[in-house]
Image (cartoon, rainbow, N blue to C red; front, side):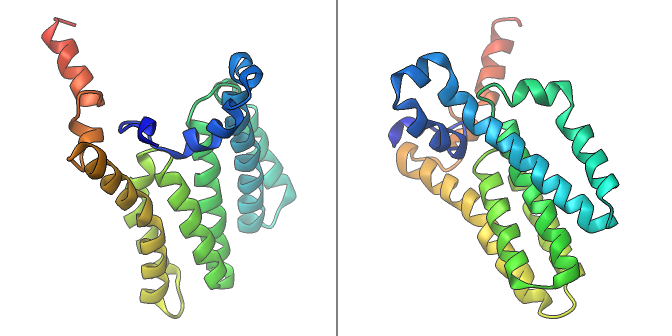
Length: 197
């Protein structure tokens, strides 16, 4: 567990590590490529479902799916052990459940959105930034129980950042080790400046 480290968020590594137990999958790169590829497929499915729900049109959903899935950059990313396709799956799931909530007003949609956001916060730091905005969305979109739904979403989604802050504090004595520690982007940038780069 200690090897998870401090800078990179843990969900992509947790998805890859059980595949990396097979030495052939590790050496061939499959262990690192399968979770992003699955994220790519899930992201496309959630995007299709969200657009279809919004526009009530299969043609619009298929067009959105084609624009997403045929993007050359994304085609490259989904074949490599990168975090972006997994984050896109979380982000499009969040989109789907927020769109679904608007029409159904169901607690299940709030729960789905919270879990999608939680997974996103454990994948990339951009997910942390989304929490307050989606919480405000639930306040605005809810026809009843506004505070309850916003609170439920906010608590579930915030579990990821809280976990990561506690993880950093427990192992390194600084809850912001990922931000200001020796392996952080900030420290790497400062070392590069010091060497004249």
